[in-house]
Image 1: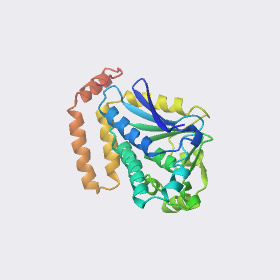
Image 2: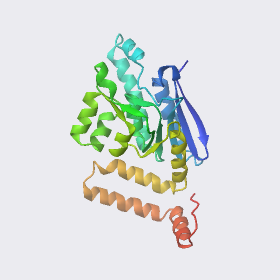
Image 3: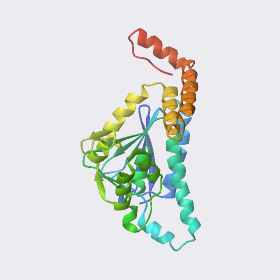
Image 4: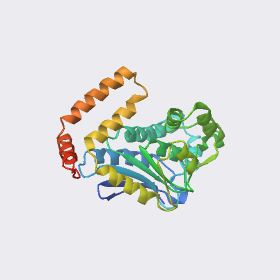
Length: 259
């Protein structure tokens, strides 16, 4: 069965489903390209206010196909480099996408599947889901931004343990470490993610985009630079029509309906 990225909608949320069930939803360059294309389309659609990424069936994503990686060892190094660039383009597209992206994880997120989940703004995982930085188990180092995301979120010693050990990490441990936002019953990760998405869909899209942009820049900025960016974003959002809608609704004790 050919790997593909399926796109459907639930209300104002676009659901991207990793579909390669015979290989536990392993990723390939076609999926990377489809992911970038889907986000580009959703960015320009006023009807889409959030995105959920989920795996088909009982698995989220096993990462890259080892069969494909083995075959690429017989090819020039540029072949694998180009493939990783495709993955990284998708990771970057998720991080810079101006709307919330939520991972709904069932079963396991391993290798690049773990990287993909980490790139999302929010993660909902089944309580029995597991995550693994499994590159080291086949003599490889991470890609997909995993080393960056773990280094940003965790103490160095813990990030080192997870990357060098390659052991399975239970979802509750990631939840305790702040990398999973919500734990769900088995089989309910997508439903929980859609509820979270629907909650965010009711927020002002321009303010959500500003928050995502500020968070992306914060760790690399000096405080003075971040303060200036917060000022500029605040002023821009105050003069956006949604601020008027929000303030008036709050004062009238009504639910706002943002544009």
